[in-house]
Length: 150
Image (cartoon, rainbow, N blue to C red):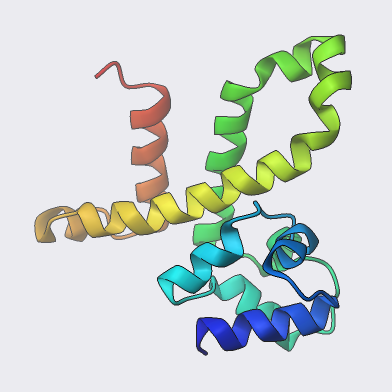
């Protein structure tokens, strides 16, 4: 399905007319829908959502996530804990920023999904043979980002 058609159908499903309204309905960053259009593709979970009768945003249906999406969510949570630890340890920070956390998590999630796609293109043929599962890619990416001293 072409990106433009998928975006139009998603707008109809969620009863919105603009890209920004669609992003808000899906708990995504303001520019995400425009980025889909630029890349010429909509993530598979949103295409699957078009087939479903559910009104929940596709990005939040855990039971329908692929292995890649589950691992991207784990990476997003790790990044969010790293970047916003003061929000969960300081009462004033939580009161000031806590309500924004679901939207921030979704932005981190979209970024993690994109990172998995980008990282898979960076591998040489030899590395691709070794890093042939999403779980291995997640482990390497998480280790490099959170534990490697390099």
